Image (tube, rainbow, N blue to C red; front, top):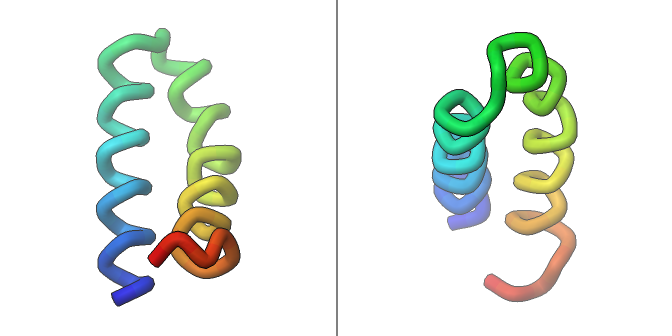
Length: 47
């Protein structure tokens, strides 16, 4: 279950970054998005 939540959050936030940020900002935002998605899925105890 956590894996699905991680990938869903990563894809949704990544697409949002691609749509709303310039290319280099979207690329730079990938690492923080990955960290937040990992925290959301595995460490937050919400799911």
